[in-house]
Length: 421
Length: 139
Image (tube, rainbow over all chains, first blue to last red; front, side, top):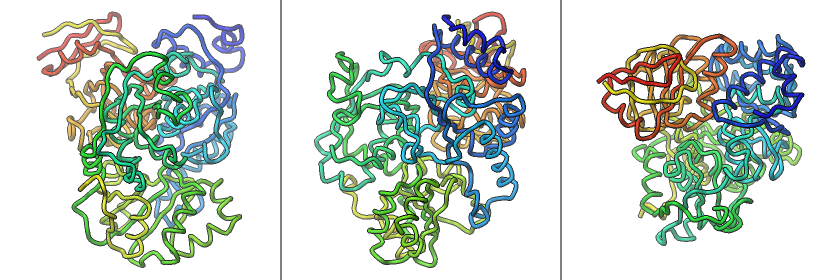
């Protein structure tokens, strides 16, 4: 393996114990993937923030103890709870103290305390072609596919070590030749343009994309040109929950797929698969608890974290009506979006509708045992996919307008879906 | 008994019961961290317990929290005894790598070719070795 003098010095411990340990783990990773050199990264997104247990807390504190500091700007992913309003969420105090320890250790490592799973909508987005190390599956997918920066699927706390060493083995999606699509998905003729008026379709397509592509790179042809940043965010998150997806190409939309030829680096697709209307309906049946039609206790959205544009759309959908007193409406967002919605007055107007706005935390970390909640609704394909295994409830899935109509009436309302007829 | 050539990503001498699956797996949401029980109701190994067993799944999927989950499972003692994949991405490798370097704890990760992987379908237990890239499956 080719190593620079600086990298040799890192491995020998000339730059401290923390960098030595970080570099040794990365060196081991490089050997497994038979990598011949390292590549420097310009930034890092750190996902070791949602509390899964004592191991991760102790590990990050250990890094602090041995003198670790990030070598590159590092943003922090969402954590388990709202650091200021965890009591309103009814989280355990023990989770709060663990999260505070996570916060303290990450700040000591030099992280930016932005606590969001949509850092690319909160001032931490790389540019095209840059080498980065990201954890958090939706961020990995978005940064690779929509922005065209380069990261592999890193996981907490490996990305901490990448941030500390400032480099990663030069392999996988860091290299141009590994970023080409191998196969092609197309939309069947029975998927008609009017179906794209319903945002659900981006989640249903993404769910199919992840199932079909597995851990391979595919290109998808036929997505509409007016797709929004938030549609792409949902697509990234949902595809990365049904599959091991790190990079997708949408022909004509994403930066490495201006044309089909470009997406395939001049080659031909190995396989072509059609996504049909029936497959959208099937994805909907898998994500949505169709049997639940009665009262709805909790509507939880902002997975990934809600953007300014989504708050605007939410206010319009409410059209002055309010959340039914028997229903809770929770929105998760970042401190950055909170600031901008607060500055414009939008945040106060949305809160006045009965919407609870939480920062820092995650829809999936819902303490069900503390609430008398029997039913959950969301517009997020990712949350819908994990909700049963993480929270314990089969959720109702519907777009943000369905969520608002359900919130106002207190009963599940889902508009007619053009793919299920 | 079937003898296969494998790639030892991280290994040790070990014989353990096997849980075999052809579905990709997400450690986030897929497993009860405290007990090791597989709780993803769509997964073919649903309700089996991976604690102390070798867990074979073709590749990882889903949330990158998997590294944190595996570290915590190693801490509380609910982790699998080993992992067999066709392909192992850095998300799955994170926990075992950090355990090896920082805690001197070996959670073996073994790779098999796609063809050989399917030969494990009827195996009840598997033996792996620290010093050679060979896997023995017992029916």
